[in-house]
Image (cartoon, rainbow, N blue to C red; front, side, top):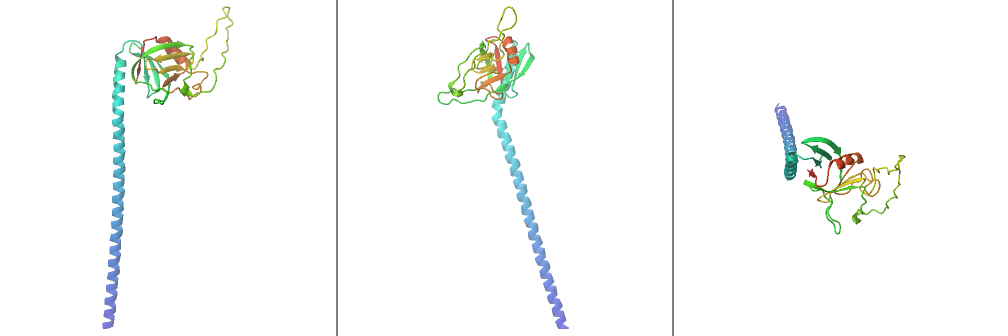
Length: 232
């Protein structure tokens, strides 16, 4: 009888030990799960914090440009004369008369290049600019930094069938197209050229503004030398 009682007591102790071991293992597993959950939450909080810091830094960097953009836009809104507005973010050129936008033309904006050695900087300056030159069918010397090795094709002289035999207008001619506006900061606004390094569809002169011949012809005929163009 005593042996049975001792055996039963031993089994009880063994069972209790097993239960305690299982309970401790469960607690350890629960602790590990809790620690993993805490790590994930901390990682998520850190990721959200980094994201917010990045957004705030971006806003902080854009704030001066946004102030400058709003100031230039306010200047343009107060101008009662016919003028142009070049929106660099939207890549559009607007013709404004008496405070009303009468024409909006899509444009291509050339990238900005810093000064490098003998090459001057090519960058569109924001603010109020002035049209310095209006050039019709002008020929330009290629800047050395363009690195273009081609040659200007020989122009084909086409004549109308009218009695006067007047030369037909060439919609695409010259290095910068048939119509060109040069601003006081050196920015060149031109129609799509038919030859040269920027004749390709997606190729734009650095620090330049390119548009179709039709849009440029309309702008060219509407603006005169000394006219204002607001760049923002």
